Image 1 (cartoon, rainbow, N blue to C red):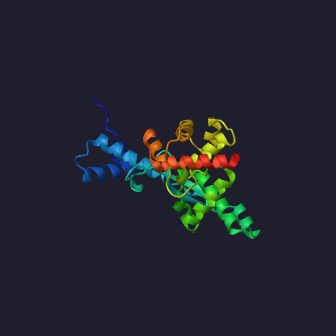
Image 2 (image 1 turned 120 degrees about the horizontal axis):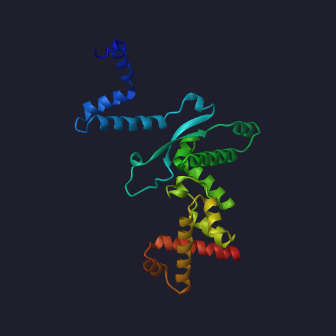
Image 3 (image 1 turned 135 degrees about the vertical axis):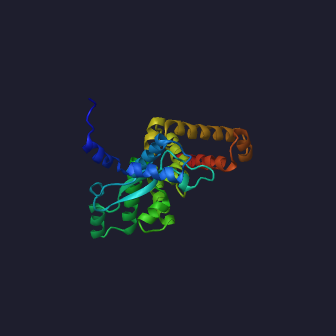
Length: 257
């Protein structure tokens, strides 16, 4: 005799198929009937769920004073005519308010110092999670204006000769002290090695060597008596870039003097 049918499984097993994944796959089938068969639809549903899971944080993972914010991936620098909608975004959890912030406010610390401390913390926390904040991100989070935030961070970078990891410095988006200036200063004024500079400026070794190499080439052309226009033509780069390196060279010489 054949195996007896399992009536309980027949009645209750379909309940296991009542999943969000299957709901998504069914909706994809209805809206995009030519996208493919069941396997393709299931894969699409899995990718959607993966994105949802990455962008949702359970309440127990976000504590008092923290905020979930969408930031641009550090590995997705801007391209020509690129929209933010076409950019890789990463959800990051940021400490918007801490006990230290409250202590500074109670202790009547200056508004400038409090805002600078918050900005530095938020930038570094986002970078540690693989993302970068822009000056506008910080302005919105801190209820301020982006020119004010930019001036605070640029002043800090000038005073400390360090790079604050944000889009203005690592992606060249917005107002920030050029990282070329800091990198060249660390090499020729402080005598630091390329690997040490890379760690301190959040750049790769290749990027550091590229900036230092370009600076050396511009300086060599200047010593040969070439004009900025001739240097730009020789090195196949823009005049503004050449002028930027010439300004850096002038600053380094003034510092030595």
